[in-house]
Amino acid sequence: MKVTKATDLQCCLQSGREDRAGVTLVEVLVAIGVIALLAAISLPAVQSARGAAQRIECAARLQELGVATQNFHQANEILPDADHPLYDLLPYVEQVSLHAELAKSASDRVGPFNGPSIYRCPADSYAIAGSLHVNYRINEGSAFSFNGLRNAGILPMRFRDVSDGLSTTAMFAEAVIGALDLPYRPPRDDAVARQDPNRYLWHLSAFYDNEVVFIEQCMDPRNHVTTIPGAQWGAPQVYGGTETPYNHFVPPNRPGCLNTPPDELLSFTKAVPPTSYHTGGVNLLLCDGAVRFLSNSIDLQTWRNLGSRNGSDVVGPF
Image: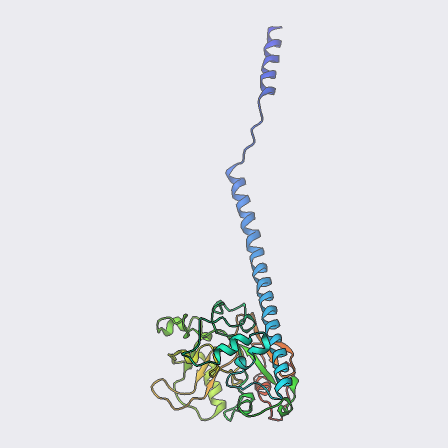
C-alpha cells in the first residue's frame, strides 16, 4: 500500500507540472532558412512588378505629351519648335504660369522652378522634383544630313510634312538624366563613368565622315575614349533655350558619342540614342500619338527608318 501511495503521489506531482514549450537550434535555423528562401523568391517578383509599373507610368506620361503636341498643332497649325519643344508645350500641360515665368529674361525670373511631373520618368532616380530636368527628347533624325524632325521642326512644319507616315515616324523618346548635369556632376573619372555609361557622351578615337562607319565605331564600347565635360551634353532642361534632342544613329540604350577625338573638335555630329532604366527597351512616342515600347535589340535599319520623316523608308515590324 505504501508503494501504491508513493506512486500515486508521484503521478499527481508530474501531472500538475506545466508543459514548457521550446525550440531547438536546428528548428531556428530551419525557420530562418525558409524565411530567407521566401524573400529570395519574392524580391525579384516585387522588383519586376515595380519596374513594370514604372514603365507603364512612363508611357502614360509620354502619352500625355503626345496629346499636348496634338493640341498645340491644332491651335497653332504647326508643331512645336524643335529647339525647345517641351517649353512650347508647357501651356498645354497646365503649366501656363511656368511658361510665362521662363519667358522672362534671366535677371527677371524668380526661381527655383519645378518642372511638370509628366516630363520626368519615375524609373530614373536622377529625375527628381524641384528641377527643370526632363526625361523626354524630340527626334533629331537618322542621318548626317538631319532629315528628321529637328531639321524641319526649326522651320514651319505640320503633320502633313511627315511624308513617311505618322504611325511610322518617331516624335519623342525617353532619355536618362545626364551625369554631367548639376547637381549630379561627379568628379571627372572615366572608370566611374563606364559603370553607368548611358549617362555620358563619349569621344571617339577619330573623326569619321561616313555615317555607317561612325555608327559602327560608336556601338563598340572599346572605341569610347573619354567622357565629355560640360553640362550641355547632359540632360535637357525646360528653360526656353535649346533642349538637347535625341537621334536614330544607334539603337536604344547605348552610350552616346561625339564624332571627334578628345584633343580636337572636328565635328559636332553626335549619336544621342534614347536611354532608360526599363528592362529591355525604351518608350517611344510616334507622330500619330501612339506610344510603343521598343526593344534594345530592334533591327538597326528599322530603327533608323523610324527616325526619318521624309526618306520614303519602308519600316518593318517593330
